[in-house]
Amino acid sequence: MATPPLPLRRATPLLLLAVLVGALASTTRADLVITRADRRVDLTSHIVRVLASLKVENVGPDPVSQVLLSFPNIQAKNLAAIRAFGTEGKVKGPSTVLPIEVVQPSGAPPELTFFSALLPKPLEKGKILHLDVLTVFTHSLQPFPEEITQAEAQLVVYQDSAHYLSPYPVKVQTLAIRLPGGRVESYTRHPSAKLVDSELKYGSSEELPPFSYLPVIVHFENNNPFAVAKEVIREIEISHWGNVQITEYYNIAHGGARLKGEFSRIDYQSRPYVRGVSSFRNLIARLPPRAHSIYYRDEIGNISTSHLWSDSKKTHLEIEPRFPLFGGWQTTFTVGYGLPLEDFVFYSDGKRFLNITFGSPIEEILIEKLIVKVVLPEGSKDIEVSAPFPTNQSQEVKYSHLDIVGRPVVVLEKPDVIPEHNLYFQVSCQFYY
Image (cartoon, rainbow, N blue to C red; front, side):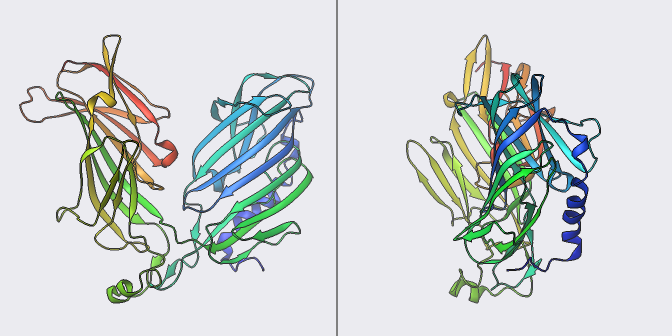
């Protein structure tokens, strides 16, 4: 198969980057060599996940305290999360989380974005580091065509490099791309390229110079839900009476190829998986095990098409909007539920601690703007917040029944929130039940 007939504006940035990185070897240092790099790209969702497993060796005379990671700016602008795990030794053992920070090495080209993975101790001469780097990208699958009819499947384009882009020489590297199934329209042909079932492999490449780049374009079918929330407001209210009330306000759109032409409800109901293959009909929210008093409604009222499964270990809520969502369509709704106070609020050193997850419980959702509001009991003081990633923080006041001075509200805002951000955060304060 040939490379897909993309518009010139799509392919040009990759071609220019390939020309650029070929002349960058002089901007890097030769202290480190990547003896092996294996990348696995997961394209089964609209959120792209890339796991790079690196074997790094210090061949220089001096200890090295950091490993540089480089990304093209056209890719880095969509980077929602990056994590690194490392362990030293010839044999890979238990890994530790490594701090990541943005850096700008001297002489580095402005067309690339660099991150530094800081090592817990310097890597001595001749020593080996096993480094796993997980990167998560949003808006990296571009619908092509950009508009489709109700009966058409959704096709998307993904662009990357068959070579691992690194400021260090790479002795051996491989690339595997996992696809969601369905048809593959086309992919960039290289001698080592091989498509087997739903996995596209670019075989071993050897002795690559620093900043080696070989463009790859894959054009394939992906009808999985492209659930994009323009804004989500998540309110967490702590009650004096033994309850934590969660209320989540959603404004969700289908971020895939826009629907072209008219929508036929009759065609959709008669053959929904043919006359609506690119739409999504439901979303799954994984709530805490002891969630209770669960509701799902919109401006009209309660939506009875939802389904709930629960046991001692989990609570699953299937959210089904009043109408299927096609590309460009959007809907708004509210989800609410209660949680036992003793599961999420604890006492230590004279203070109460709220320990709860930050993001949305809905699977595979991208939230372009998330606002988390923690409503504390009236009279709370000495408020502190601990989050596992940077957020914009502020405070406001909310008045409820029988309040006199109002309840303090901690407000946390973060853009481009993905499932990997659904980590625990803490709010501590002093108050009395």
